[in-house]
Image (cartoon, rainbow, N blue to C red; front, side):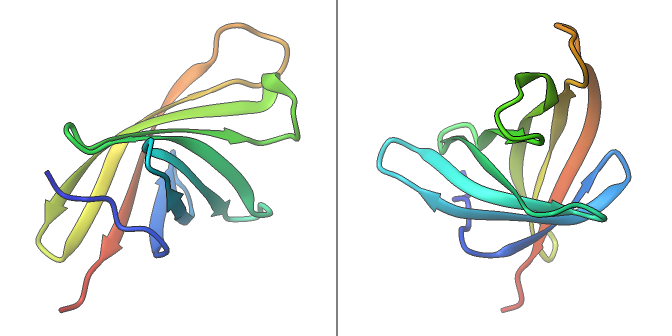
Length: 114
């Protein structure tokens, strides 16, 4: 399985909202920290986990401070493609005071130039 590059600018698309995904750290327990910046948004911190064996990345975007009603939960899988690496998956988006969110698709691409 391909390893997850850190410290790079992944070009991200979340349900047609474009921006960047940055994976800043992966610790010895495979916890990740990073940030996203989508169009017309400030930078938002993320935290989650990386599973090297399956290529699965899971993370939370806390959109509005500590308000759990304004969070987004992402799950995606890494694969190598022709010119780099791509993460593809779904996100559960919660807005307002509801237990049920809705799903959207997302991907992030990292071009690697030899």
